Length: 435
Image: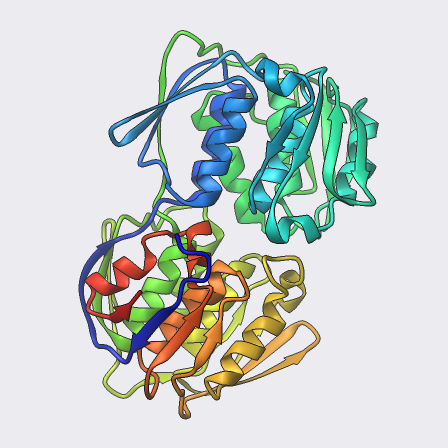
């Protein structure tokens, strides 16, 4: 993709059907589980985003053999056993994936060699103090760059009773749960204070169970206990896992349908543990016309327009960008709770949303943990910038569909992080998009 890709979007009326992208939350966890599980795992509907590619490269560096066969990924692993080039203290590169760095660091620490873990872009600015504090308690040596990347770790990690802070991100817990399972932990517990994003932990536990890994007892999300029961031995049987459709990416398509069309989205599971399926509550509350069948959601604009809504995004902070695009077209003031979760994303998302939507004449006010969006007025096409944040690029693109005049998005290729086909998909639905 071109480095400074510019996308222009004209007001459009959408119709037609599109398939949701693969969930990177589900895909990256599946890669981790396939690595720590010994044997062959077949991953169906694998993702193609930059974050997904980073996860595949990481598990290859940590010893898994990965082969792409048509629409499936075949992973053959003997557990965490870094290939020799990595064992000579080369880098594992997590790209810009926050989930990869937080999940794979404890997993990489299962081996005894020194490994350097690095990333790119916004990941270099994200705090990693968590590992400085927690990993030494598990017999892992850690050297960080003053709480930032790169991290140099050497294990092997030994599961012990520990207490962690779950308020910054649940992704650290995901990595610890996977590594404890891989190390066959028994009679140990991870205590968690103030766990955020519980649905993502549900997804982790479900993926662990699907891959036949040892799953801890979950005591009200306050303690995860690994008992003595042995792992179910699955090495000789290949397991099959299908990556779910992605509610985080599809949220933008659903909002596009609510403000500018009458469209159908396939491939989403309403029984999913993904946090972002909560977008459906906001769509119902603002009055969007919804019709739901198995794996298909039809959505369109109500004849009398959309109305303001209230929403708590504390457990699903990735919904802020699509919700802001939605709220821009809802009459009245929409209130979204959970702003404190937005500081350490690809950008400081609360401020970025405020800045970029102001260019489109949408007023956003921040009050402590609340975001107030004044909607239903004029939304004007403008020159906006993704701030290198995939979700900001998509939020601006969706808002542009009903704006007055053309919208130009700079650094529009940021979408490759999570949803490389996004512009093609809205084009298929009838959006006027020029790349």
